[in-house]
Image (tube, rainbow, N blue to C red):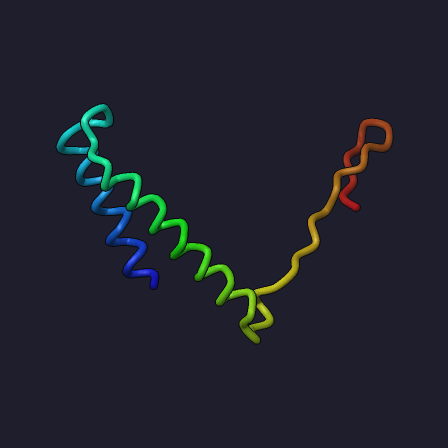
Length: 72
């Protein structure tokens, strides 16, 4: 699926390089919709993976105490 995404985005980039942003065709909109669908499938597939490197993450929130910044 990654290759399909690359092809869709490469086609869009090529059209923009040749014709410019103002002269792009309506196919460009379909390319963006197709790219979004492919990315959605990739995200869903990776979230269902058993790989422990992929999964929920904890994001630290900076806490300021005086002039020092601490991560919580």
